[in-house]
Image (cartoon, rainbow, N blue to C red; front, side):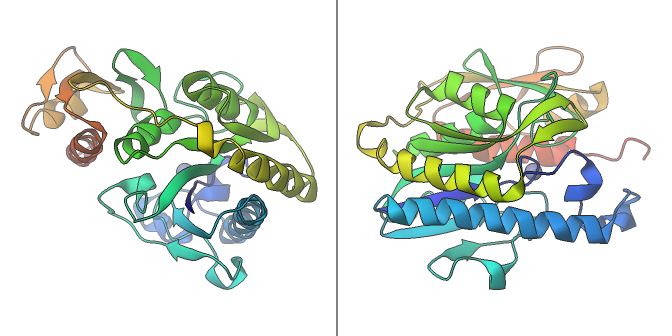
Length: 286
Ligand SMILES: [Zn+2]
């Protein structure tokens, strides 16, 4: 059985600021960057992924594939990855953070470096997908990336069994998907930009142990299935984004900053979601 790791960055031990997770080339877009601090996070992110790989292999996985799931999706340091892994990098993948879940033999998903959903108090860098999406409701339930990606994995019949990140990210994932998800808390959120962290070495140990335990949950774990015809509701930070989101066929305006559509299944959901986000991701001072 293969394990797919969806590796995000904000939930890595030591991370409390956007400059720690922003690639230097984003300076061209006017974002503050700090190349040295970003590199340190890449190293720690890669080491945490390796801890999850070690746990997966110890727990009986035949193969582990990791999908770089943060921002430009070129964050993992290939030479420093566990030699047993194959890895997916690069942006604009059809399934986004879940790319690879459709590969033959994938039977479980791990989330590493995950963060809480937009609006969560005392949760480092809490957001959903981008900085300008205030809320996502799937079938009426407010959720974050952990829920969005679980619905995609569910379509392919694959359950999520591990989440690593801050305490709120772990709690929200387990609240949605249940106790089948082993949790590894690497930091306790104090505010959006502060946390109490484990030492990086201790974080990796906690992740390794949780990953091995997660493998024991795979046989009895359930995929998260969106009911057919589930509603998807998005609320943006600005009406201008909703103006453009409705360019996607089937998407309707439901409020000043809100749009909605009906998703036949988890795969259609993510494809439409990505199209909506592309349309809504406009420059706010054109
Ligand atoms: Zn991220």
